[in-house]
Length: 410
Image (cartoon, rainbow, N blue to C red; front, side, top):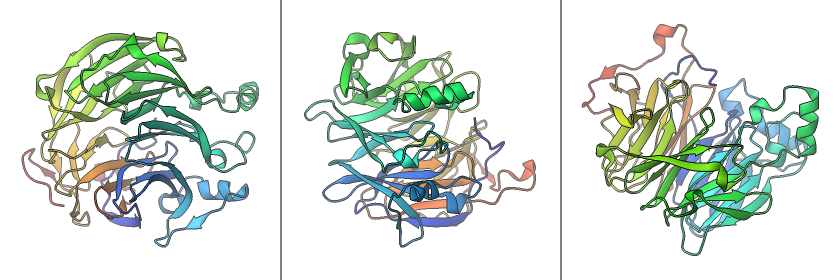
């Protein structure tokens, strides 16, 4: 659960982090907020760069301190961000990255046909008793197939926050060396593959066949209801039920398709479950500037967010940690924000300058009033913005409301 009762739209430029020669397609704050993962795009390769952000956000244990104590070499970026690791392993664009909740493992999906699991070793958010003492390294590689781009990847069962309830459980976890969860990947052939990170082998396809007629662009797991949602390039969402711990492909059963008229034949680019509502709602960014909130119990769109431009680029949208704000990138180089309940646009402070390339991904820090966003196809840096904690709940917006059709200034 999020530690923020309400989030504030950042109004101050915090820092710039060099991405790649062609920017970065996706970025992600780690679950504890200690690191920022940047999927950089260079001319000949596509590394994942991990930065320590604790010196900027405060009140978060430093990943750099933990790494240095075990002899991991730390480089100081010229802009002031601490580069913890440069994970060089993909040779084409990285579409998706995902941490385990204890920050022990990092999963990546790439256009090179590979999904990789990285053991972050000494960078993990674990106690000294069980934290490894080695530098980040590749744990396993999943090869989906030749010319098969991997668009999405996620861990199947990641309830590591609930493991350390007593000493006995902590000891068992140490003995199992923090076992990596199983993995699901979605690719351009329309199937969802199940993978065992211990053997690097595929356990088969969910449903036993290609269930999607389009490319599987994103996968979202609901840990509370044991549901998995997969979205494709034709605007179709499939709901899967997970029985058991997900260690076998037989634990997954297709329940139904969700086909919303507004999403018909529009590629689904990102999906995120509402972080706090008990009744499941799914935020869906699709092509042709379609941003909707779906009620998963009825399969209908209940909210519509207008303003951001999405025609051909991969653009993602995200909730703030407490779910009261929706924020998204846009092909016009601007950030857009809305009140998640009223759908009214929120005017961003003028400090959020318009970029000269599409803003393709945004990430909100899990415990602080900090957001990061990135551009692709240019060497534009990743930008981090912050806001002071408000003195009262009534000050939480710090931004005027606009009509749902009025443009938000960049």
